[in-house]
Structures are given as C-alpha cells and as structure tokens.
Amino acid sequence: MDRLIHIFLLWIILGPYTLTAQSPLSAEKQEVIQTLEDQKDTWSSTAQSIWTYAELGYQENKSSDLLMTHLQEAGFKVDRAVAGMPTAFVASYGQGHPVIGILAEFDALPGVSQAAVPYRKEREDCTSGHACGHHLFGTGSTAAAIAVKDWMAKNNIQGTIRLYGTPAEEGGAGKVYMVREGLFDDVDAVLHWHPGNSNNAGAASCLAIKSALFKFHGIAAHAAGAPWRGRSALDGVEAMNDMINLMREHVPDMTRIHYVITKGGEAPNVVPAYAEVNYYVRHPEMKVVHEIFERMVKAAEGAALGTGTTMEYEVTGGSYNLLPNAVLAQKMYDNLSEIGGVKYDDAELAFAREIIKSYPDTEVDLKSAAEVSPFVVTDRAFPFSTDVGDVSWIVPTTGLSTATWVPGTGAHSWQAVAAGGTTIGKKGMMVAAKTIACTAIDLFRNPEELVKAKVELKERQGKDFHYEALIGDGPPNLNYRGE
Image (cartoon, rainbow, N blue to C red; front, side, top):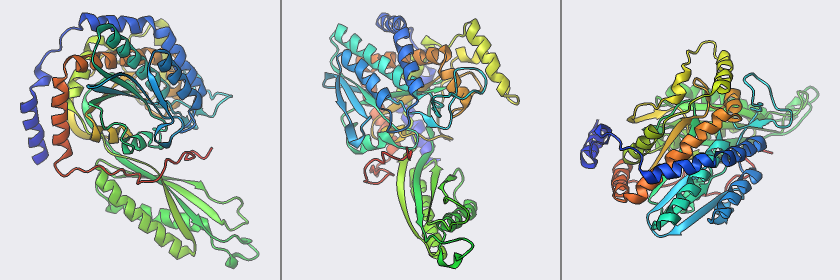
C-alpha cells in the first residue's frame, strides 16, 4: 500500500500524463517516418538475413557484423567486443548530453527451426530459429538509431545517440555484463522494444531470474557387474530435483522454478560419472530470486552428500525485474498511437488465417494487429524475464511491443518464427523503428522530460538501492549453449 501511495504522489509531481491527449506528429517526425518507410526494403532484407542465420547466444557473429556494418557506413563510431563478449558492441554518434541509448538484440533460440510458412515445417539447414523475433529487434533498433542520427546531423542537434548491440538475451544475460562494466553510466534514457502479437507501450514489470548449471561428479562402474564400486552422478541430479520439487510448496507466491537434465550419462549399463541439470528460478523481486537460489544450492550440496558424489555449479545468467518508467512510457505510447499498428494485405491476411488454425482453443481477432492497446501503468510483473531489467534499474528505461506475429501467437513458438520470416514481421518491425525514432526526437527536443524520468527512477529504486548483479562477478559464459 505504501508503494501505491508513493506512485500516486509521483504522478501528482510529474503530471497527469494519461489524461493528456497526445499531439499530432510534427513535421520533422513525419519526415523521419517517411525516410524509414523509404528504407523498409533495406531493413527487411537485413532482418531476413539475420532470421536465416538464426545464431544462438554469443555465437551471433554474422548477425552482429551485419548490424555494425550498417552503423559504420552511417557514420557511427563502433566499439566492438565490449564487456568481454565478442558479439557485443556499442555504436555512438554525436557528443555530450543528452545521451539516448537504444537496445538491439539478435540471438536465436535452439530447437525451434521453422520455415516461413503457416504450418509446421522445420528448416533442413538449421535447428535453431528466431522464436522471440530478435532478428527484428536488432534490425529495427538499428534502423531507428540511424534515422535519429541523420535527423541530428540535419538539424545540428546537441547530444549523443547510442546503439547497444546486446547478445545472448536468451539465457546469457549479455546486457547485465554491459551494465556491470559501466557502459550505461552516462546514459540519460534507454529505449527498447520487443516483437509480439499486439501493439502496446505501457509501463509494467516482469520477473527477475537467475540460472545455473549444477554439475555432479561420481565414479563410473559396470552397472550390473560391480555397481557397488560406482557413485552415480545422475543420482545426485535426481536427488537434487526431488528436493527442489518438494521445496515448491514452501516458496513465495509467483515463484517459478524450471529445469532440464542436460547430461544424464552415456549408457544404462555404465554408472554415470558425470551429470548436470540446468535450473531457472524467477520471481517479481530480485532479492527473493537470490534467496531461493541459495536454498537451491543447499539442496544440491545435500544431494551430493547423500549420493557420495561431488557438486559444483556455474551461474549462466541472471537479471533484475523491469523497473517501469511512466514518464518515458507515456512519450513512447503517444508516438505509437499516432503511428498506428500493422495493417495486413490480402496475402498476409491469408497467411494469418492459416496460422490461427493451429490455435484451436483460442479466439483470435486479426483486426487487433492494427490497433494500439490502451496505456497502462502497473507494478504487476508479467510472466517473462529479460536482461533489460538490469538496465532499467540504472537508467530510466521504457519499451514497446508491436504486432510482428499474428494475434494469438505466443513467444518461443514455431508460429512466431514463421511470421517473423514474412512481411508481417517486417511491418511490425518498422512500426517499432518509427516509434523509437520519434520518441528519441521528443527526448532530444524536451530534455526536461529526462529530468522527470530520473525523478521517477530514484523514487522506484528506493533510498537504499545499491546495484549488485545477480550473475556475480565472473566473466560471461560464452559457451552456455554448449555448441
């Protein structure tokens, strides 16, 4: 209740943004939007290339290089391989403040290979896929950054536009290493977006997360001839899993714990000398994630003790919950509302109708792709995690989602991969690029909004806030995908 009172008072201080009608897009914004529209074929081709590459976290060499090439050719200064990550980069144009950052992702997911067709069909040339649409994310953000740079040069705008190439969002926590390295310390605001099945730009939170590989070492032996000589590493994994599953009853509400056994032995007639399990734990508050993770470590230690094995664990990722910023979100929403959503042509409508046949239990309104959802400010944590969370606790941050997927589509699905490889995905990407570019223009033209956004950030952080990354102080795990 106290937090709600604080937020209410904050709105009184910052002004009743949700009651103020947005202004029509200015002439300079319309010019930037038209420029992006004229370049849509270039950006669609770039996105399609990255969709085809479908490179996993920390392996996005071709994807990262392609975006950096565009930025260098546009006149950006590009710093490569930042924060110990070969595919991470920071591209900057201009000097001084305000410094506006834009985030770009480009990693794919394993095991969701899919062709750009409205039915299940795996690609023969690739086992991974852009089931979260990061090929669109990285390309759209790059397009927006270059459009803002061109506007700045034409209008002699003081300040810096900065594009952050952030690898391995899917479990690798690339942005967290960049935050830990201090790469956002001088930034005044950060803008980002994400593919989705609707168009929205509210202010909301998500789940903090921490992930790790728990590695058990035993003693190999003949499973029939001399099992007493062995100590099963798989027994250690299974004992840990049993204890974690018992623990589920005794954790705070909204906790999510999931795992997969990534190695369980080579053959049934050999007592496994090595086994490992990959765990994620999530909760709306990062301090609760930390506490539960420590309990999981104790369970793993107990499992090793009880099975006569040894255990070590490796933290593979971890990120904070998103910290909403209503000041910036309102600006993003106003621009999105003026730009509008995604309008299907006949071919896209036919594709969408075929896709929704794979959702037999879901009612889908295809018209919603062209609509913009109402503006919402909430502390509710939506059931996903992102390493943008750490950025949002350091710098005022806001994002949007656009209908790059057919309405009703969920992330991490073959349907998302399919739509992302078509003009449906590219149209949604261009909506995002235009919205981010216009929002950046607002912030350069009205730096007082950045002051208000920082007031809100401090309020939401709390007076005793001290940033400490959930990943600890180790280097990035560049081989976390095991490829």
